[in-house]
Length: 398
Image 1 (cartoon, rainbow, N blue to C red):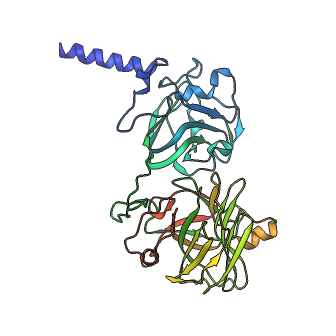
Image 2: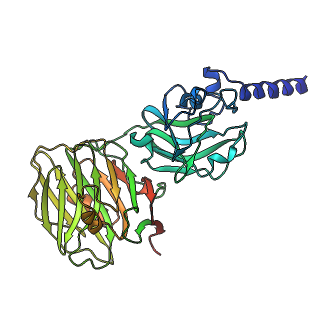
Image 3: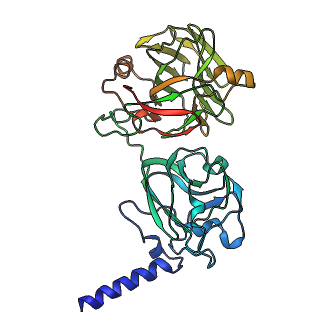
């Protein structure tokens, strides 16, 4: 009796895994921990080889893997093809599970990247990377750990070459992103024992290159009436050369922090700028914070725990959301010569940003690396990022 039952279960599971059915039951085939959020959502892709290969085939809840039978997506042979699902709202993604084509061409997916973030432009290909697919077998289903990366859009793309992209199922195992706060709207205090991300590591920009930069993904939109931005920077002697420290640009707005010349730093937002005289950056490292509040426009720089004079900048301004945050390049530079002049070479670490102005004692805690509120826009310990070009992630102490 038990033997017959085992055979029945095995046959039933095999039928579920190999038959195409647009039902909720199929959506739960692989459902360990977080549920699959992709079924029935909005999908798109860089092109469509034919109607049979429509993008929706990857989120119908079935693991059947024959393109010939209409089970899978298929693009044309595009340069850097992509497929994207819009989850409608932000989620924290624990894993992405992909089913490869089973009737042929299993090697086409080699080198594909899984990207997660809040930027839908260019098929989501500017969002941070969760994982790279080294290889998959014919019809294989494989899970990729994304460690809670936050975003509304999940993209599969094949960078750097012309290729067909075919996906038979993409499951996004995730739970809703909750902005849980306390202490008057502030985020919980960071716990260094449980945080992951870039804690204890640095981003090292090895040379000046227009193709070397890092896109960082915020944990909430930068729709800001005040903020605090802190980071550690180490550079060689720059002379009078400009260098970009932080760049954010949306369709209608921008925020840039630059070292303008020896001992002078610029804060640019919208169409206005303000300059500060400060101690220069050092090869031994400098800790910089910038604070700004829209109501009175009060802004200040903090260099190695010491505050500059306060100035008035952009009273009543609201920093617009929907942009891209970048390290290493100045998105606001107008000319190629200006872009070349402002490219960053050196090390960046411990970048945090809050949607409020930190108190002086809290900025001191950030500078001294004591316990301080978790960054609720950017937090180095859990930062989602995508590296392009000659940028390395290295241990802080080496």
